[in-house]
Structure formats: C-alpha cells, structure tokens
Length: 271
Image (cartoon, rainbow, N blue to C red):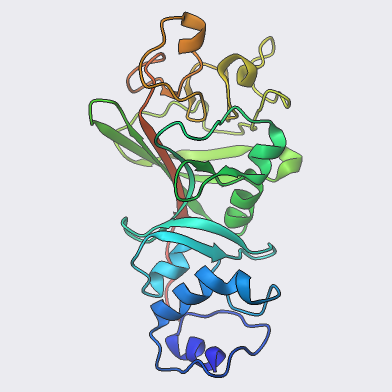
C-alpha cells in the first residue's frame, strides 16, 4: 500500500486513511512525496493522502527539484507553496518579486490570504505563513537584487503572531548575510495595509503613504511589497512608493527582484 511504502521510506509522520493499494513499496520516497504533494488535492478529501508540513520535509525525503507542492502544517488545511530546493535544506518561498506582473498594493484580506502566481510573483499569505511557523523555530532569508546584477541577502530567526496580533513579526537578530538590517527595531512589528494601520508612526499611514503592505516601523526603512518600477521615478512622491531596502542602495532606489523564504531553524536529530 501507499501507507506501507511511505513508512518504509522513513519520511512519513502521520496517516489518516489507507490509500491506493496498487502503489508499491518499491517506489522511491522522493517520487512518492512529490506525487502526493503535487496531486493530493485532486484525488479527494483532506487527509486521504499524507502531506509534508513544509518544503524542508520534502527536501529531507529526497525531493531535489524546485516547484509547486501541496503542504499541510499542523492544525491547517492543505495549501500550495513554491519550494526552492536549490538552497541547502529546502526553503518555502513566501514572497517573490521579479517583473511587476502582480499588483502588491492590496488590502488586508488579500495579504492575509495571499495573491499572485506561485510560479511567478506572489505573496503567500500571512495566515499560511503563521501556520507554517507557529510550532517551531524558523529562519527567514531575504534575497535582493539590483538592476546592475548585484545581489545581497540577510537571514534572521523569527516568529510571526496570528491575526489577533496583526501578524506581529518578531526578529531575533541577523544570523548571516552581508546586508544590514533595515526592517527596524527587531521586535514586535505588526503588519499594516492601507485599510489596517498598525505601524509605529502615529501621524502617518505608512502603507497608504508608501504603497503595499509591510511590517512598517516608521515608514522609511524598507518595503519589499512596494510598487515595481523599472527605473527611478521622476516625482519624489512616486520614488517613495517603490521596492526598497534603505541600508542597501538607499531609500529611493527601486530594486529589481526580491525573494523571501523560510525554513526550520535547526534540523531535529534522528532518534
């Protein structure tokens, strides 16, 4: 059975129903998990197939190709994510900007639930991100690229509260990367959109002023969900609305691409 095959692979943690007896134990574990992750939703009710909790579980099972897979964090309904398997460990991508094809100037509900194309530009959704990270320690890797082909990155350990906290971001300090922090004060930054103002600047709605939704402190440090510009706008008020990271390239330089991805902070030792 598929259940027996999965258990012999040594990579399945939970089962709810017996499934498809014609699948044999000879199938490689990576192929098995890839098959279930990519096709599970099409074959029936939730729980019929085992699903990985995140992209790292797929990576540890031997899945080496990046792509869209279905996951099911503990306590959550299944949903699809883009898994980056090119970096060590397998990363779950939560945001990507590459070409301006998706409008990121969205309201609270869109940022809560997610929008865009998982194969292109997208925001995964705050509620999904919260489910992914709520039961363990997670790292956040931010990758930036300018229009001259230069790139920088920074990695944090972080946690993310639920909607009752306005999806408050708690950064535990940079772990690696040459990029200097520009998110702000490392601690307790709630998420803001133009229809839900939770930023730390009392007299300004940063999301309305800058465009997009973000963990704004006082508006001027970073916004990776701003408007996508292919050149620096002439008007000052437009320049403020671009994708920027103040400590790299400055406040008014519109970045070419950004990626945000997460994975568990440490691998659990085998028993």
